[in-house]
Structures are given as structure tokens and as C-alpha cells.
Length: 154
Image 1 (cartoon, rainbow, N blue to C red):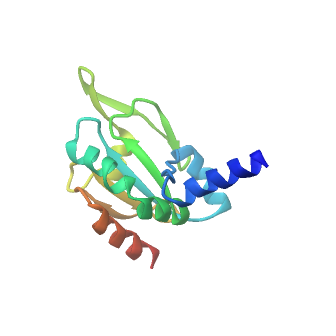
Image 2: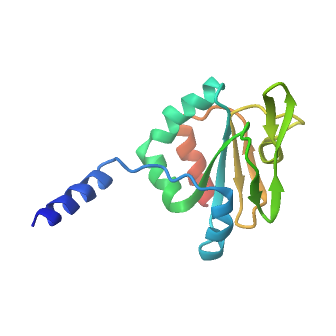
């Protein structure tokens, strides 16, 4: 009886808004696409970008957005200054230093460059074949992000 109560409690928490956004790695997405094809939404950000942090604390905390992203897309949270190598689409991407403890990751550049520059935050949407179908470089509030997700599901 005690176990049943705990299970019901945990299910209640999950269904009442404590669902967390599932951020996948690029390596995991390669495998997941073999099982179920979905569009990939990549959020490219840095630790120093105030608009990036604002999106993390508002847009990506919205329960409707979290549920939509978890159910309909693969979501990747990519720090543009990530220092580890990332394997994606059978290719290795590396951190490219540009000064003393400054640089950018090759994959962030590949996915986030628009008009020959990268401006954070960047949303990059990939289709099921890992091809870029959309890039957006600006803060998106929850309302506008929901509209974007609806259009992507069409």
C-alpha cells in the first residue's frame, strides 16, 4: 500500500507541472533518429549571454513548451563555448580557441552562423536528415516560442 501511494504521488507531480526538459546529446540523437524520426531543436548559447540565460529561465521553464519539446522534438542544449569534442552526423567537431581562454565550438559555428557571424542565443532547427531548416538569432519569449513549435509541427 505504501508503494502504491508513492507511485501515485510521483505520477501526480509529473502530471501537475514538474516535468523537466529532456536535453539530448548529439551522440544520442544519432541513435534516437534510428528509432523515431523527429526534428531537432538546438539551443546555442553561452554562459555570459543575458538573453540566453533569460530564455533558460523563462521560455525553457514553461511547462507547455517542455511537454511539446519532450514529446515532439529532440532538444539539444549547446554551449557555444563547449570545449569537448562532439560527434554528430559521423563527423567530429572541436573547440576552436581564438585567444586566451576564448573560443567557439565548430558545431556551434556550423549550426549558428548567420550572415557570417554568430549572435547568441541561436535556435537552429534540423529536419530528420540533420539538415538545417531554420535558424533564429534572438530571444524568444514563451508565447512566441509556442507559435514557432506549432509551425514546426505542420
